[in-house]
Amino acid sequence: MKTSFELAAEFRDAEGKGASRRLRRANKVPAILYGGHREPRALALDHTRLLLMLDNERFYSTIINLKVGDANQAAILKDVQRHPAKNAVLHVDLLRVLDNEKIRITIPLHFMGEAAAPGVKAGGVVSHLYNDVEVNCLPKDLPEFVEVDLSGLEMNQLLHLSDLKLPEGVEILALTHGRDAPIVSVHHARAEEVEVPAADAVAGVVATPVAGAAPAAAAAAAPAAAAKPAADAKGGKDVKPAADAKGGKDAKK
Image (cartoon, rainbow, N blue to C red; front, side, top):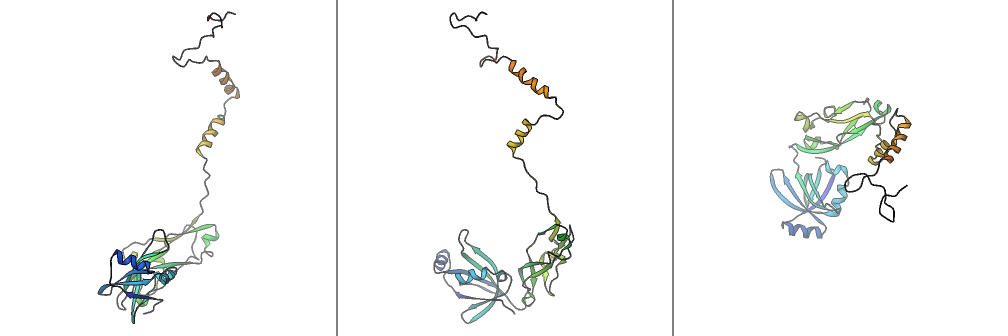
């Protein structure tokens, strides 16, 4: 069985939140190893070494040689719990791998030949709908990635899961369940739409005259509105002429 990474580990007997916190303070990561028709085993991993491996894409999709003392165990990474704010790993799940048993694992898709695609040369844009795919196979047949050739894609053309070329013995789980999803497409670039702010749009409606309206009509409307006597604040009636300063009566002409 081919392995790509070696990860040192040590057994741990103490479990629980308190024991896990003490491990993390010592720059260790609590982990669990399960599967392979054996009981789960609690482990501790070196945090610094693990972070370096997690930066490599291949670490997630290849078989790891887990070294515990003098013993070696093939395993794959099943789950990683990270701290929500810090660059720290809180917990890791590992699955034992046996030579004669198939494993389910997610492997990346590598897209090739995009620049040579006729649809791209015609001004199209490539959209990646999937970046990885879950497969089922024996450990000896496990590929590191699946190559997707885009060099023949025309405008508005799709590639589906069934179009992928896989090594012998490797099957895509989605296809076994009848789901042949699209993974990549080439389509026309959408024109950018310029949105007018609401305030500017209202101002534009007020300031822009109605097409075909006579200029004189707008000019006549202003004096007409000004000629109406202002209504008083209480009753809405017309305001009476102002009284003179002496007698309080209406001012005579």
